[in-house]
Amino acid sequence: MMKKLVSVMLCLGLSACLLAGCSSDKADVADDSASSTIAQPIGGETESPVVEEPAAEEPEEPTPSGDFKILDNADAPEGFVYNELSGRLIDASIENQRPIAAMVDNEKTALDHFGLNDADVIYEMVNSLENNRVTRLMVIIKDWDKVERLGSVRSARTTNCMLAAEWNAVLLHDGGPFYINDYIKLDSIDNLSGVFARIKNGKPVEFTEYVTHDDLVKYLKNSTAIDTEYNSYYTGPHFKFSESNAMEGNTYSSEKDAVGTIALPFPHNASELHYNADENMYEYYEYGAAHVDGETGEVLKFRNVILQRASMGKYDDNGYMYYNIGGSGEGYYITDGKCVPITWNKPLNLEGNTVYLDSNGNEIVLNAGTTYIGLIPDDTWSTMVIK
Image 1 (spheres, rainbow, N blue to C red):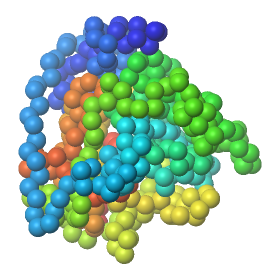
Image 2 (image 1 turned 90 degrees about the horizontal axis):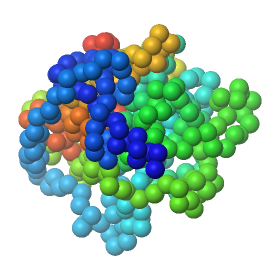
Image 3 (image 1 turned 90 degrees about the vertical axis):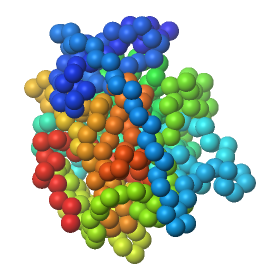
């Protein structure tokens, strides 16, 4: 009942600056609905004017070319459906299962990681304005029953709460600064914190917590505390997937060929994506080496890459920060060695999906497979190298 009470009491005071895509460090909350309209940080001492969000135009359907076709569950083999997060086939019994969104430490000491290759979507984002802007990974997995060991797990930030709500995912983390408290009280955000296995690995204790299969069975699968199926806050799939080649089917007006390396502007770990043309995959590198799973030795790789430009704001002088992910901005979609400019748009409510559009205003269609989403800070966007 506490979550419902907080959800009823909280609402976002949105400024015209935010709607225009500008950075806003403070926003007040006031709403009388049972669902949250918080797409930006809760709290602040000054009241911002409420701005009504303009009605969004329905994007046109992508124009097919050749044998291009969007994946549809009606065409899936009997007993299977297409995973709405990745376009890959999954058992029909989990069609309505909510994903998990796990916070994974990306500090060098936390390596090797485990279980990231089970992901459908992985976000990389700045976790702190201190420590040379160290990043953290948010790992989203639909079929979480296959997870054996995932992590190591660390704390969440307000941006992670916003994104978990957008995917209707259960947020898995180990605490966080008090700025997240008002978020995790909301009905639209379910979370598990600090309950996961501690596995001795010779490292300081903060690097020893992992989500295990037993944890997921105990706290999700066999528990009634959290609904494991999509609920009333779910706003539908984020992506459409191509049955063949996404670049052939989208209505892109321009593209860059032969994209072999993406040097991301994350100075702490110097992460990069290297194109493996034989597999049509982008392999993830950081700290000067390929990212490999601690158990399987498999390189972390992605079929799709989305780079989303977003401004940041700070809470205090200790490095705690957030991204402005409500509104709109520019970006790139990269797959099959090609790069096209896109725009992104997220309605100014917490649970609304971020939609990615091509240069003609059509929703982009992705290749089936894992997707990397990099939230690139506005002030370092121009330093990113795509070649």
